[in-house]
Amino acid sequence: MKDIEKSIGSCDDLKELENLRVSLFGKKGYFADAFAKMRTMGDEEKKQFAQDINVDKEKFLNLLAHKKLALEADAIAYEMQKDGVDVTLFNSDTGVGALHPVMQTMDKIIEYFVSMNFSIEEGPLVEDDFHNFEALNLPKYHPARDMQDTFYFEDSMLLRTHTSPVQIRTMLKAKPPIRMICPGAVFRRDYDLTHTPMFHQVEGLVVQKSGEVSFANLKFILEDFLKYMFGDVQVRFRPSFFPFTEPSAEVDISCIFCKGKGCRVCSHTGWLEVLGSGYVDPNVFQAVGYEDVSGYAFGLGVERFAMLLHKIPDLRSLFEGDLRLLEQFR
Ligand code: PHE
Image 1 (spheres, rainbow, N blue to C red):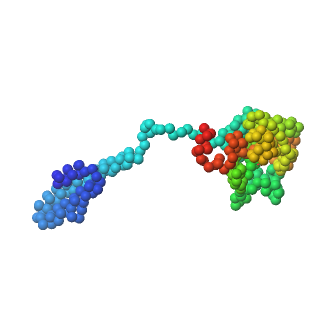
Image 2 (cartoon, protein in one colour):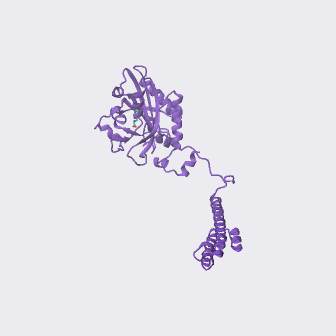
Image 3 (tube, protein in one colour):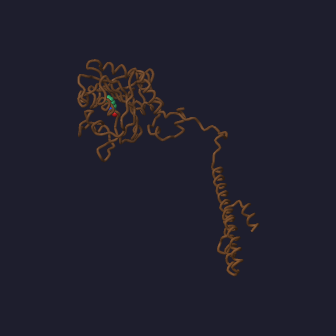
């Protein structure tokens, strides 16, 4: 018995400990043997023997249980140490992160308009028909709805196709004057060199008392903004159509690649289209219950700005997370 006690004491392995346990308490173990022997003893002898053996039994059960706990704790400590990381160890250069080029461009755009006293508004990505279309003078079955291929949910909700619904939300919750931009993600069913199903827009809206704001204000601020973004470029306004503005204008800058001489990027026109804009259509004001006001609005695609600013040929590469591209924007 002394040997086994020693063995338990020096045991450093759970399997070995189990073997020791079986040699004591197993069907053919020491105690089974001892109890078998007891049957041949006289009463007096049996009594003494049983007392001794029960003391031993208790003692070994205790020894085994304690040893088992200790070995298990050791095993856990070992596993933790094996998989652990020494955070104080010297590490080689893992590189510094940076904002994504689209977000850098977004920040630059926001910076300009905040400096011009525009507030920043936000709206939900999942919109209803009223905010995304109806209130923007795009009634059901209006052909201009096809300008924006929409992702629909089953319950007639949709992913917003532009940031213009935030114009509506802002006007519904605030009184004029309004001077806001809305940056955010928008979604359309599109995928090619210049289109991805998700991209970002910055929308702008200015509303004041009737007669206090004119197309000249719109023209000034967009020209100033585009020069802030692209440096010394020419800016031109081209008549266009949007259901929510009247009159509407698309805004072009002289091609920053060929300086207006004509190249592949500008399709040899010398101009690049960068903004949609216009005077807010009276139907939009009517939809939000505004009276005696006038205003202008504009919208732009942030990815397009980023592509132009950084001469990125394929829009899709902005969404691939390729470090070879992203590392150039630290
Ligand atoms: N919402 C338009 C679009 O996504 C852009 C725009 C906004 C045009 C505001 C005019 C005024 O194409």
